[in-house]
Length: 217
Length: 290
Image 1 (cartoon, rainbow over the protein chains, first blue to last red):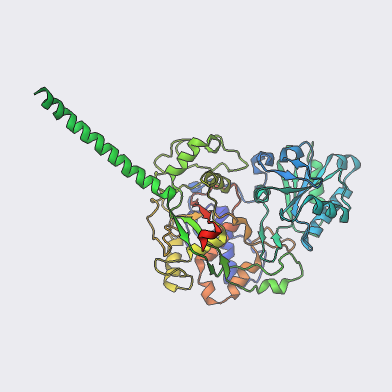
Image 2 (tube, chains in turn yellow, blue; image 1 turned 45 degrees about the horizontal axis):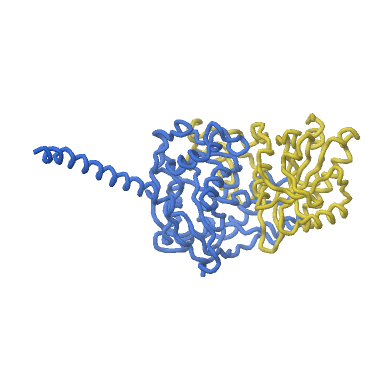
């Protein structure tokens, strides 16, 4: 199978997909086979697929207008100076979002008093039309979120699309009003650099906690 | 005599000037035409390779997820660029927007392969001919370019809907001959130096180069393969290939669509790829859409 010039990291997924399509989905954890034909390494410079640290780039470079649960206008930069645990959810979500929030609360509980005092917990809305300050207030109340540490933010002008892009979250608004999305928790350092990304819920949280405590602010 | 000599000198000079102006016009036309040329894509429906399950956030619908129902999706009318954005057009953009020059772009918005085939910040060079599509541009860069023109990236729905057309049929997604042509294109390695825009076929809507020249960014490239199920997020969604594989031979034959979905799913917004460019679309006012 010959293919157009791709970096290896990209072609591997395609090869995996096509291979899986032809093998009747027997397994999930198929190792990504090397492409049958790969171009010379110089075809395209490519960071490895697992390279998540954005080359040390701060997400604070993103210019996105945010409103918090108290109706205050906030920029991303204003979140700086603290290690951050962040996720993208929406308040009317009934399945994965509450679990992501619960995981973040569990992380909050597991931190030492000193760490808990310096860490901030940030939820970005995937449903800006409905996640008004009032909706976030109710969400905070229902989930017993401490407003001293939790910022619940809704972007203006489609900024959630850029936020999802810099955080690496996949999502899709569905016709029924729901938003399908990755269950992802991201750890950022005080400069806004992504230090750790984790997808999935109901897992051991040790990795996130250790990523967080290793981030010095 | 004096006058005649003057005329003898002046006439060729004038002819030269006229010729220069004419050719400059011609050049401007060939370079400018793609910048502004858009065609109306009328409203319609298309059958996506993949339809998300009714409630993909639920974690207990494994059976449902394995047999997603594929439904035709409605697409509203929109205007689409006839050609992908060229190196010449992108050069004009980085002249006006220094923050998008190769040496200045922020790493958050483009990885270190950004415009790597250009000779310099403002010099595309031999590997990036003026009328060839610009590649090695990130999703952020593509959006910034189009925003400056009042355009945006097509959604996956818009792109796939427009790209289902062959030269004669608006929906050729079940035409074995068309699919075979796409398969052959997709299996052919890209040349080191990309051909100019307009060098592949113009489809029934009047859009050129949707297949066979480059891959193209979509606004919601990161929307396919979503999966709320624990641990499955970072992988290709099972229900995509299971659904595809189970949906019948005619769908499986659409190898090109599989490749596009797989390719998109492997991208991140800051990646720059040597075969990946973009084109713009414009929403149209409700009144004129009718």
